Image 1: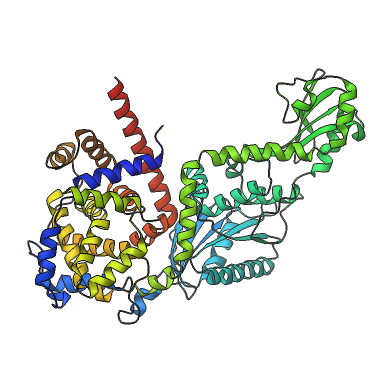
Image 2: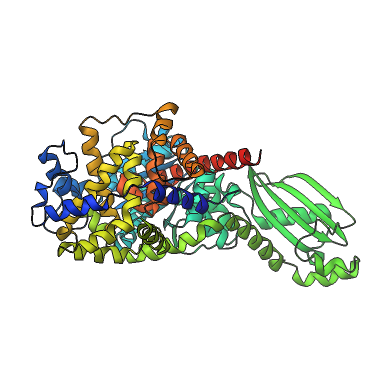
Length: 406
Length: 198
């Protein structure tokens, strides 16, 4: 398959071939008009009214010129200073100006349409708009005692503005939660402008905010894939972060994920050991993951003991065992990363030695890494561009100021 | 012509839009009346301006007029440009404004049917048959917004975020439209290759 870069290059080179050469006429017209006011320009095959030229050129000059062509107050109030996305499961995006006023609100998925209905948010204070949205999320049952987490992602070129906005939103939402006597959890973060994030967002049709969180969680060592995480609500993701002690970089979090609904990992583990009749000290190669399939949360517990391999599925809400499998001869082919270690001998004494890595941290990490690399691998093509963009973004620190003047 | 082509290759080698700082310097010199700088800017950005004008107007003659008007206009208004590494963005805004004037003056930019696209491309000069067909199929396959986004990114070297600013759209929309467009283009290229092999 052709890579995106190749396609882009082919398009560019095609346009290079068809672009006509009009340099001579440009030079002659430019020379002719030297010293003229730009508004007197006579465009080629001129059929246009001078007044339109004045308007057009004045409009385009504001792009890079400060002061002289200051934007009107109206334009400034329409200028987006940040994009704020609110993810629960409904995903809502608000564009905000420098004065924390909402310019526009959009529904990023179908559930969000249900929340926004036909309400007009434009011109509202961000705090009032967010309170109203949170209220609707609670009213419509997207936030309740079992699902209590909200993800707030702020996307702005102005880091200081973004940080201040995050803090304000965090405080506002927490205050609103306590006003309503609701034990909620708020996760705040910046949006990553990384192409691998947009790839995740596009592939699974989720917001850039949620995609950013997913990328951070995987980078912080979660065993879940982007696909699995994309299907979860923010409450489920938040719960997993707590359960697996995942602490992604650069997010701030208030409150804790609802955990009453689910039995703990330790309980799940203990149930599985008890059902297998094994002593925890005999166990090796332990792996526990919480999966959310069709709204059913299930712990999958895998381990080895006494030369047997056990796999249990435990309902995460009731704590009952829903499925189990025991294989007495361990199939090396399906084994994980440490199979090399085990390959030369398949006997009990070997497994006893393996007990040293009882918690299997190393094994888990390896498999996580490989999963993550697989995901990244698909984006190789974009990665060069990511770096390039990041560098350029750093150089473009005045983007926002300039936009204000547009 | 050969020199132009060689310069164009050099400009592409410097990056999708050439060196942004270099373009700032050209405009600075243009403000002092240096027409060599205008030539340099033209060589660095002419295909971006033409491609973008073409994407907006879907007509080669009009795009050619706009190409002329944009650089004359840029030369005249160079003194008002404040160097900020955004010369290409500035040129694209001028291009869009001039195209909008064309549209307001009654140019038909409605969706073209297959025959009209064939007609547009039959007038194209200086392009190999293979690339011409590829370009025609790409332009045909994309809708108006996708076409603008793809050209701004692939030809003018805009970052997605810059496209979002330029087109006044949420970044997420730009990204999803871009990815959708690229999917279409990948399948066109694949079909082309299969036909060749067949």
